Image (cartoon, rainbow, N blue to C red; front, side, top):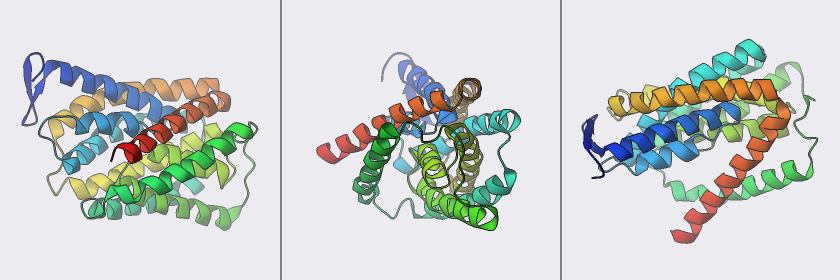
Length: 266
C-alpha cells in the first residue's frame, strides 16, 4: 500500500492511489465531454486498484462516467441544441443495447474485439487526417425516418459495445455520426453525449441489482469526472468543431497505441 491507507467502499487504498484515481476521473471527464474516450483513462486506472474485479471496475466506471455525461449532455443541449428527434431514438436504442452488452460482459472475452477495433480506428484516423474538411460543417446524408433509423442502428451497435467493454464509446459515436450521418464534429459531440448518457444508464440498470458497483469509490471519482466534463463541454462549445477535431485525432491516436500495445504484450 502506498502512503496513508484509506478505506473506500471496502477496498484499502493508498492515499496516493486515491488521488491518482481522482485526477484520472477529472481528465476522463474533460476528454469525454470534448470528444469521448474518457474511459481510456478512467477504466484502466480503476483496474489497477488492488482487490477490484474487472466487473466491479467496469460497473464503478459507469457510475463515475454517468455523472460527467449528465453535465456535458446538459451543457451541449443548452448551447448547441442537438435535434432531439434524432437523439431520442438513438439514445433509447443505445440504452437497451448497453443493457444487453452488460449482461454479456462476463461471458465474451474482450480480446476478440481488439484487432477489429484497432483496424477500424486506424482507418478512421487516416480518413480524418487526410480529409481536413470532414466534420467542419453538417452535411446530412439522409433526412426524415431514414436518418433516424440510421442513427438508431448506430446507437444499438455502439450501445452493446459500451455495456460489454466501454472505453472509447464516445469516440466511436462521434466517428459514426461524422462519417456515416454527415454531422459536424461539434454537433456530433452533442448527440454523442446524450447517447452516451443513455448507454451508461443502460449498463447501470444491469450492474446495480447485481451488486457490482463500488458506490463510495464511484461517487468519489464521479465528482471529479463531473468537474472535468463541465469544463470540457464549455471549452468544446466555445472553440467549435476545429478544436474538437484536433482533440478527436489525439484521442483516437492514443486509443490506437493502447490497443496495439495490448496486442503486442498479450
